[in-house]
Amino acid sequence: MKKIFLTGFIALSLLVTTTSCDSDDDNNESAINVTDLPKAADTFVTTYFPSTTYVLITKQNVADLDGSLYDVKLSNNFEIDFDINGNWIDIDGNHQAVPVELVPEKIQTYVTTNYPNQFVTSIDKEKTTVEVELSNDLDSVFDLQGNFLRIDK
Image 1: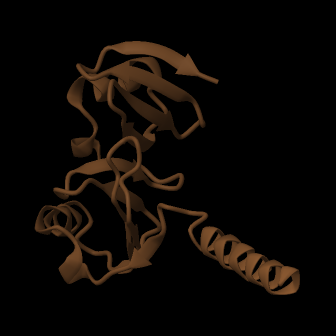
Image 2: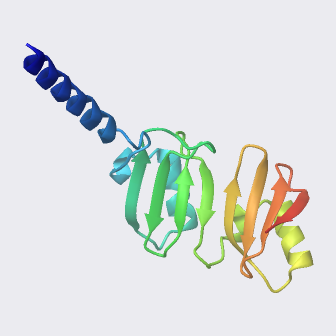
């Protein structure tokens, strides 16, 4: 009887261990088609990056803390994160200039005034701030109204 109980206990333990290992990452991503991307996100890409194509579009099971749910990689090496409604959250140019019309005017003015030979390569909308990376790898943080707060190191 002890042998049967022990065998059952071991089998149950293995089942629980195997099941718990399968869900280590609750935020798995899966590749999706452009037709599954919110229309606003597709319109954004075709408006601001008209000569590029989609390389990879993924959707996370759970949104990140900043609201990002969709990750888009473009043929020009830009990476853009969108929320559930297709609003951009993060634009990473991978050392290329983010189109100036996507940088809030007050932030763009600050950059051109204080760093005239630099350009924005990444912009990230957080819940309470906007983080900007410049072509010299300087990270600056602004409030949601575009007021400069600090340099991040």
